[in-house]
Image 1 (tube, rainbow, N blue to C red):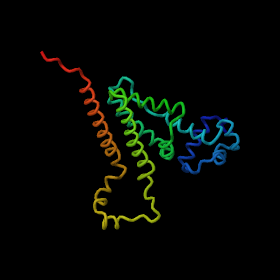
Image 2: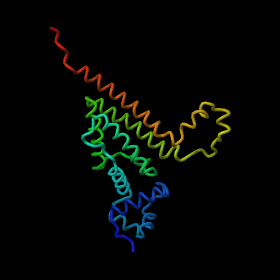
Image 3: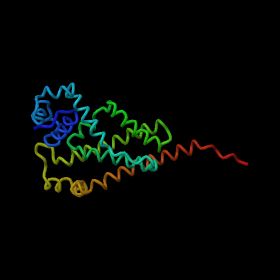
Image 4: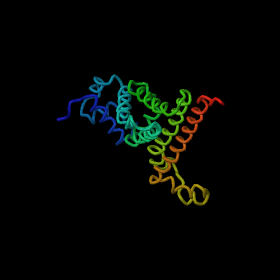
Amino acid sequence: MRAPLSRGLIVQTALSMVADEGLAALSTRRLGQRLRCEAMSIYHHFASKQHLLDAMVEHALSTFDWPAGDAEPWQRVRETFRAYRGMAHRFPAFFPYLAVHRLNTPLGVRFIDGVLATIRAAVPDDALAARYFRAAGYYLVGAGLDETAGYAKGPSAAEPVDGTFIRAHCPRLAQAAQYFQREHWDATFDLGLEALITAMQADAAALRARSAPAVRRR
């Protein structure tokens, strides 16, 4: 006997299907086969495939590991950025869709607001906090895509060159290639993360210094 059909079961099964077969394989017909139901039964829970995809995005966001509320502001920023990478790795096959999806569902906009609030608590200026939110997004999305759909997938060319060609014609790449491997990803991510946070801290300190009242001379 199959479990009763529900929104939660459909979303979990859809994410499992994407993990096994890729996003291109997701259709209500094939999903119905996995669920052992007619495709039309799915539409009783989701008005369209886009509604299902929105629910899948919201499920991924619901797993986001927010830092403790009493943590120091910069530590909260650091842990929030790391948590985004963690979410990407929890849903590697689905992340390329999530990464470019406009988060304009109720949970999506609350997620954005939460990240903005975390950054704004450390950066004392609305405009600069907004720009750093976007800059962090560029870095985190790029890192997530590279680690889930880039190097993780291997060569994507129809006729990829081999190591012999690279050693003969691209000596710098041949030398650096060992540091592109999975065992170096954490160190590389942390290098970029700390560079970003260092820049944020410097700009925040400069803003506070400019806004501090001048000391009156005696």
